[in-house]
Length: 110
Image 1: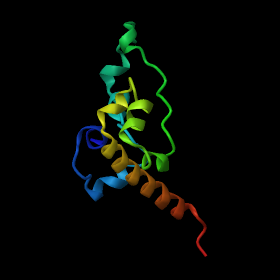
Image 2 (image 1 turned 180 degrees about the vertical axis):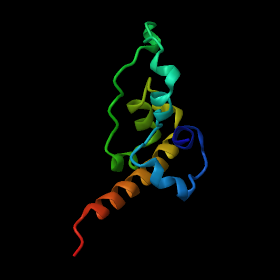
Image 3 (image 1 turned 120 degrees about the vertical axis):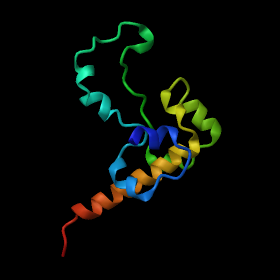
Image 4 (image 1 turned 30 degrees about the horizontal axis):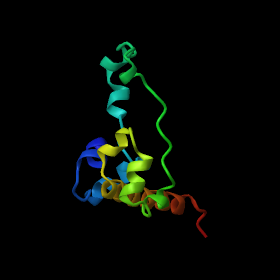
């Protein structure tokens, strides 16, 4: 489960899961999107549960320069704070590696 690996797990993420993580820095929710029960669920009306636009995250490289104060300031009132700064930085390393590998694969071969 990508959500578990990127949000809950404090351990290193095993390398066999790096490629499936793709560009997901935090969470996945694919299971929620394809669940047949969720397709019929009414939209929330309680303000705390109404869907809102995600807060913009910084460039991945910027996450490596963040201090704990930056982390708190940028992610105040965000569910992204469920992952600690070291966890987000771990995830960012994986995403950057995946994006680099993908761009290498998409380059014309000579």
